[in-house]
Length: 228
Image (cartoon, rainbow, N blue to C red; front, side, top):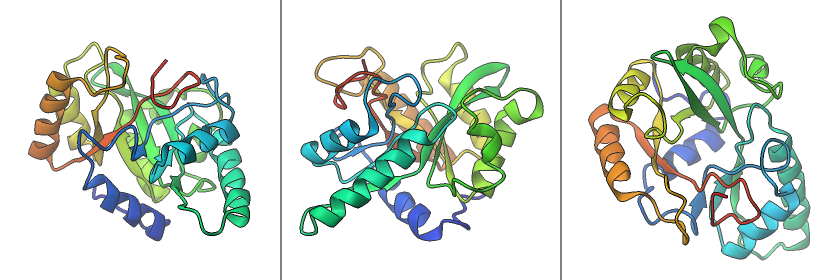
């Protein structure tokens, strides 16, 4: 599979350009591609999340609630209203996003989907607020569905699973994944900071397999600058 942006070309191509520049300093004050709201297992209302994102000065973000885009849609509406009332302000880019459970090497992993067309039939089974089963649960089919919807697929927190990230990233790359969540704070430090050893290893693997690097705080609490 190729990194395609067929259906949401402008949004997806812009995101690809951003992903190409992500490094250890990108999150959490410039970009944040992993956040949860009350629409899944987070504590923030989408409006409060967007208020924080603008106060922080984020250039771009994605809300990645589990198996639904309710938070994204609410945030998108809020941002459109905010733009209307603040025409001269810096407007962050907001991409569609969700976090999907999938089977990879007989391990449950999470795949982050970005910049997809929310109404595309291929992505719809994964936006029903619960994990899928059977054939649709296999990572190769999750990745294919994201691509068919014009989006990009990223393996979330690859060093957090029972199976080694060396094995999982290799398998995900073979199945068409576009990127890996390279910069991630596995021990939830305060202030947030990517775990150095894991980030370096994942970045090396991303380079080896030609994958994008991404980053995000995986916010579940009330502060976008922390995970919990």
